[in-house]
Structures are given as C-alpha cells and as structure tokens.
Image 1 (cartoon, rainbow, N blue to C red):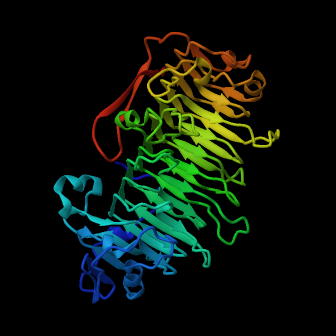
Image 2 (cartoon, rainbow, N blue to C red):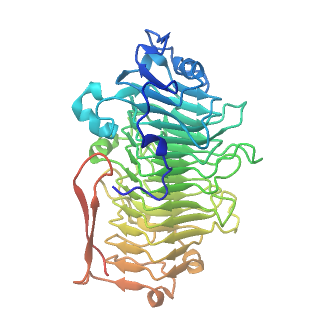
Image 3 (cartoon, helix red, strand yellow):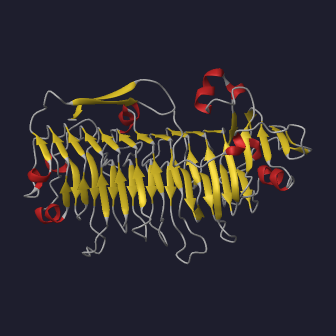
Amino acid sequence: MQPSPHACKTPELDTEPDLNAPTTLLLTPAACGSLAAPTSPPPEPEPLPWVTPSFWQQCIQAHAQVTDFLVSPGDYSNWGRLVVYERDGRPERKRVIRYWGPGREAHPVHRLESGPGYEATIGGFSFADASHWILHGLTIRHPLPTGQFVGFIGYSGMGAGSSKVIVDSLLMENATGYGMRISKASDSCVQNSVMRNMALVTFDRPGIQIKPGDNTGAHPTTGNRIVNNEIVNHTDAIALTNGTGEIDGTVIAENDFYFTPDFISRLEDGKIGCTENGIDIKIGSSDPANPVRIENNRIWGSRFLRTCSGTGDGIVIHQQTKNLVLRQNVIFDVPVGITIKPFPDFSPQTRNVLIEKNLFYGIRGFRGDQPLPKHDAGVLSLQTPAIVRDNVFAHSERLFTGDVRDEITGASQFERNQVVAVPDLTHLPPLFTKKNKVFATVPASARDYVFPRSRWQCCSAVILKQAFVP
C-alpha cells in the first residue's frame, strides 16, 4: 500500500531505539521501570476520562527523559487509561509509545492470527494539553462501559490544548462510547488504524468525532487529518460536530467506512442498535481557501433504521456547514448518496459545497433490506445549491430524492457529469443534458470499477460492474 500524501510523517518509527539508552524504557504489564503496576483495574466509570489519574500517567511523569516507551505484549487494563497530560515531545523529535514485541512490523489486526502473545492491550487513551507524541501499534478491546469516549486528543479545560499528536496503526474493537474524540486539538492525525464493531447500543456512537470548542483562537480544532483508516460498524464512521468555532483545514482522506450485512441484520428490528450515516457533517470551515476536504474515501453499507436520527446517507451535510470539498469518493449500496440540508434558520446563504469527481453506484432505498418509498431514495438530496461536476452516477434508482425542488437544482451548477443507467431523472436542470453525458442504457464500452474490499482486514475485491464509460 502506497503511503498517503495526507498522512503525518513518523520518522521516529523508522529507526530502532537503543534499548540501553536512558531515553528508552521497556514496559511490561507488571512494571514501568522501578514502579510496580497495580494488580487490579481502576474503578469505572471514569469521572473525567481526559485527566483522570492513572498508572500510565504516573509512569510517563516519572520518566521525563524517556522518548521511547516500548510496550511489551500483554494486558495493561490494570494501568487504567493511557493518559498523557501536560507532557510534550519536541518538534524535531516526537515522544513515542509503541508496541514492542513479536510481529511488531505488522498491523495489530494481522497479529491477531498469531495469538495473545502478539499484542499489547490498553483500556483507552487521552492526550490532554500534550503535543508532539506518537501512539503506535496498540490494541483496545472490549473497553469498560463509558458514556464518554475511548480515545481522546484535546484540552483538559485548564491547559493549552493538544497539537501534533499521531495515533497510528491502532486496533479498536467493541467500543462502548465514542471511538475517539478530537476537540481543541490541532494538526493531529489518526491514520492506518482499524476501528470496528461498536457495542450494540441504542444511541449514537461514531467512530471518530471532531468537535470545535473555541472561537477565540486559543484552542483551535484545525488542521486535523483522518487518513487511511478502516472504520466498520459504528453509527457514523465520522461525525464532524458543531460546537464553538469551526474546523478549518480538516482532511478526511483515503478511508473505508462501511457496515457489514451481519451487523445490519442484528439491528434491523430497531431495538438493539443504531446505524446512521457514513459521514455526518454539521460543521465546516470559516475560510473558503482552507476548506474541509473529504477525498478518496469509500463508503458503503449503511441503512435507515427506525431508532436512528440518520437516514443511512453516505454523507449528510447540515447545521452550520460551509466551505466543503467532496472529491474522488466512491459511495455505493446506500439509500442516499449525499444529502445537503437547509440551514437551521432557512437563510439563503450559500454553503459553498463542491461535489467533484465522485463515483455513485447502486444507490437504492432501503429500510433494513426492504425498499423505502420511492421518494425517499436518490443519489442526491440537494436542499441547498451546490457545485456538482465531473461525477459518475451509475445503476441507481433516481438521480434526486423527492424532497428536491427544481429551483434548487436549477441554482446548482451541473457540468461534465456522466449518468449511466439511472432511469428517473426528475428535477434535472434544463441545461443538464447539454453539459453532461446521459446514457439511458449501458453502452458496450462501459468499464468495471474494482478495488480491495478493505484496506487492512482482508483480501477480496469489490467489483462495481459497468460503472463508468471511458
């Protein structure tokens, strides 16, 4: 797999640490250096997960000179949450907490096949008012119940916020709270990680939430990147949540966000769980020159279920979102491709949303596995205008949902799109067929679009048959 141009660089992981140097510390479940670890887990729930004292925090504070904490295989649940509070690395040399054991060159999701001696498990993590850190190669499994979040990068309420924290090659399973929250943190990355199979709860539990909390500039939530991850079976894979301020320069790129059929089948009666959308966007950027960018992601498998507020859209854009670019994504097997809702006050201001070079395929209405009423399904639900250009819409029931109005599509810019075997083109702007290519039936020259089913877990291919015309 080629490294992403959006990923944060981690040169600290490319060199072997000197095991005899005072800047290196090998950890075991029983001890942090000369400090003996607790023999029982801490009480739950944590009152303030981002700053609740833990043995991890004690360990890091007692070793200020250490740059490389090497975590040997084992279960570290007795240590409590991995809390890094008001401790920084250096811009030229981040401090590192990483798995150090057999198979360390492999992703933790692949080490599972070798047994428990090939992983180091923790109960969660928090970087609060901390900068220049890398967390690499650890596993979080069956975390204890919490109404908060399993992972956190941000602000304690008293310090400077966090910046330049990299969470890399993490495996998180069966999260009972939000998988991860980034708030009042800047220029940080979550990358190359697998987050899968949230606990079956009846309320919203996204994989990763980014939420601003400060419009003064003192604690920005800007420039963060979610890159090359696989987020499976969370209510929303990504939630960009409105708060105080905006999230300029956020990048969500080259990820797989999806639901599996077996997980959906356990949710269909609407009593034991919830699924909403691939990406739920309620906040954007204050700067048109530095927009929020959603690029090169693959999104599929969501459904509309009765207990959820979401409707199974691949991407939904609402609340105060402005200045957003959706480019080169593949969205398929969902009830609605992209929904853009009106502003809450129905004001006529523009959202400045660009939808460009995406592939939409097999967009059909579902409630469980039953068809929705026809007016609920469609590739696009544009309730405010957008720029829509150079996209492919293929093998879907209809181009627009029934709540779209002619005046909205007429005010939008539709140019150089390709429509392949979409029978219902109601609400198309009058000039659409002059500036775009519409194929009522599939031409013989149509090509398949093929890609691996998942970035990290396994191996089969997805084939979208006759998806585009070269």
